[in-house]
Amino acid sequence: MKGPPRLSQTKKGQQVNRNINPKRVFRYQLMAIMSCFFVMGSLSMVGIASNYIKETLHLSDTKANILPSLVYIWFLICTIPTDMLMEKIGRKRTVLICMIVLILSLFMPLFFDNYGYLLVCFILLGISNVCLQSSLYPLFSTMVEREKLTHHFTLGELVKTASGFVAPYIATFGAVYCVHVLGLGWRVLFLVYLVIAIFSLVMLASMEVDKEEKTETKADFWGSFRLLKDGFILLSFIGVMCHVGIDIGTNTVAPKLLIYRLGYTLDKASFAAGLYFLARLAGGFLWTSLIGHISKVHFFLISIGLIVVALTGLLFAHHKLLICICICMVGFGNASLFPVFLSQAVLRQPEQKNKVSVLMIMGQFGGALFPFAMGVALDKIGMTASIAVLLFAVAYLIFYILRYPHFHLDKS
Image (cartoon, rainbow, N blue to C red; front, side, top):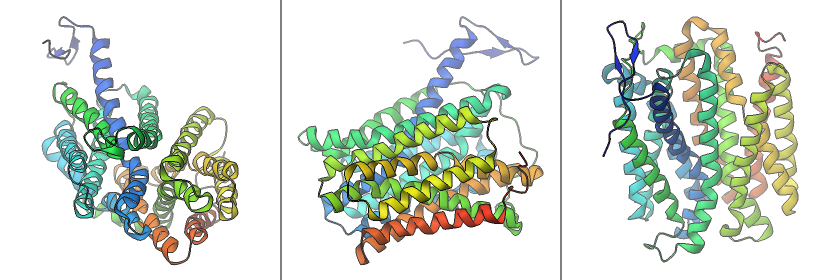
């Protein structure tokens, strides 16, 4: 069997074609990286997975929503250590280690389905995904020309979102048609991601990358936290927490709305989670096309407006079409808020862009807080209270734009 395409280098660092076209090498690398982005979308499947686990193990909403929380809490803990690990062993080796841990986390649910094992599984899933996200982007940046970096990063994000979109449908297909196939049922979802993850690992391991550049500054565990002394950076960090909280909270609660209010079974209601990711995908495409034609402030205001109207509608909606429209509006409005927070925070302190970027990625641990709070509210009070938790996050986003009506930086 022929190995992957390879390129050697001259002493001057120029690429030399050795039995292969350089474009073919890049296509191979791009396929490997994009398959990693797809597997990284397994982070988005925790919403539908937690719903099926709740039904299968007869859990309360509080217990079921602990699972997404266990995944996203690691954004706070593992982001900076991953950066430090990359300095010691390199980007590619770090990504390979993350993929191995991810494969282990996807393998476990195929054979163990009690609550304790699933807790361990989701912890490993969270750790591997957070570390993979922190290391895959830097590795990818060494393969792509700088002027095409944004384009390829956007492509990766779209692949990751598409992964989240198909997850509910794979789970539903498994629950309906794969009950007697290895006894997996909806857990065939883990099998699909496992196969793709193994494929990604093999491609990455056989892939050659250019010699990695050394960073001028060493990773500092407390350096990023010290940036929180800047009020704008602090509020942007909390903004990321709220943005991701809305994202994971809506993804998790979407099927429950149809179950609690319309009496749907989970198999019939799971499409709502896929609908949310489809709207996110559409919103991401639109925002990408509008870059340069609309100011970030106006985009931010439009996004918040859509989310406010949608969540207010979900408080009272008891009709399938209205619920679906509101879910789509949340996904559409919440699609691209993270790049706004990240870009404005970096512009605030451009000399600290690496630490600022790490800090904003850490802010995604908001996905651990809001689903848990929503589960408690749903058990103690009801569905309306669970939705109201997300309105607190939107209220903060309104406060943020009122506090910084021009982001201090965006004058367009």
